[in-house]
Image 1 (cartoon, rainbow, N blue to C red):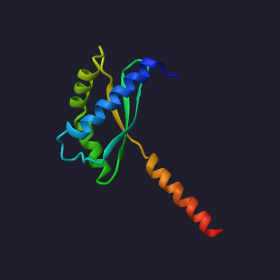
Image 2: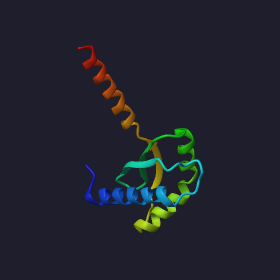
Image 3: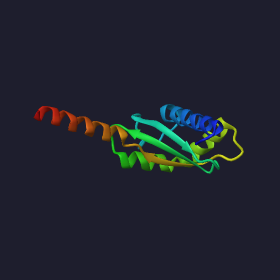
Image 4: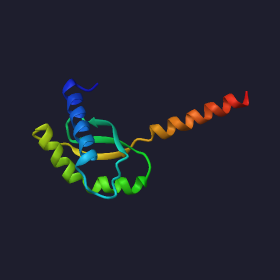
Length: 114
């Protein structure tokens, strides 16, 4: 179980990256329909797994744009959190919304058959 410090750091990283996605990153591949759903920071603070949800647009292109801006994002996270060691950021696509919509369609089709 993660300590309170790790949880606080995760929330601060999530807040900082979310604000950067709204106003800070000027890459045209990154559209405005990207949101940070969760951030998991490892216990040794080496990695921060950032789960993102991409609505509309090309997911691969948006992920490529985010990966190219990793250095800038990491520097800004370091300024905001004032940690001695800033975790390496790893972006992962969160497909829970797509899976939820798929499950909803399955439930609707089962109810329709009855």
